[in-house]
Length: 394
Image (cartoon, rainbow, N blue to C red; front, side, top):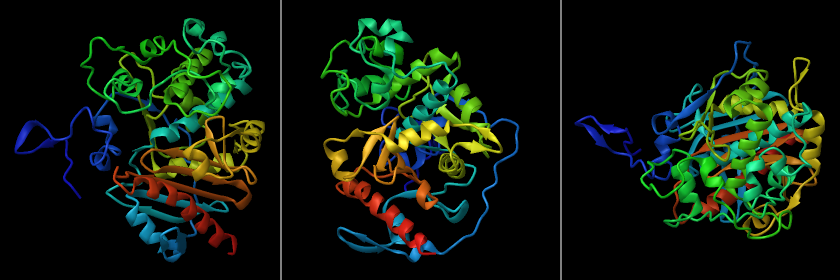
């Protein structure tokens, strides 16, 4: 593995990892586990309650063969070839496979990138159940300042389902909206005085519509970013404190999580959460078990049922990788016939939940951005389904 220490010991003042590209390959193999050393963060406290146990019944799943488009490979080969940092499988409430790689440890938090979005969607369901939010209302009901932007007329539910119509350039071109977001959310040094200083300032500049709200699915990072602002306004809490109060502490997390924040303290709702492998497994098990833990309904059961059964039709490459899939409440629905939930992050972060099969898989990875990147992402689904199928016969 390439030495990716922040500083060269022979020259303590010399940066090795470029601050304006730290989240990208090859640096991500180190930085995904060291985000606190790269940018500002806020803690998501686990509380002072007991840790939810995860009983073990370990099985040798590494030899399971998977049919990929380019041929058969074992689970072990798949993990080695997909830049895995950690992999966890739970079946019928027990850990049956757990693997740590690339120096990841059980207590180490790992950046989950866009899998963060599914936590934001889940928080929206909880806040709605408390009567603090009505997803049928326009976004401007909670954020009236957005009446002067292209978010005017969009409902909260349309943002939850990624059917908003605001123009937001997600390319990595030099002057794209995405590059402005990286500077505004504090991930990159802010060296453009003519660009928005905070994420909220960036949101207020988005006054062009690309399509009517609700017209079609369009995956967009700024959509979840606005949802984060909305949840803070509706609840009166920071996203980190809201996550701690409503999910992390009551579910019995083993470790604190954390999330990156911008210069004004706003959390990166679209992709800044960091958590341990097992705590992501605990979250998945909470959803699988109907949202209840120790007699307390943490996540509304009706919201889980509705998320699994609904969904917006996918388009483009998303529909190709998930031919029976949909998107709803910031979750990918892997298969609408089964209602399987899938949180996904850009580096190969996965939280996969199939309640009918009592099956959970969590994968933390740091994929290289090479010519095989797309195929590696396409390989994730057949790998998970092959493991699930093998377990269904036991």
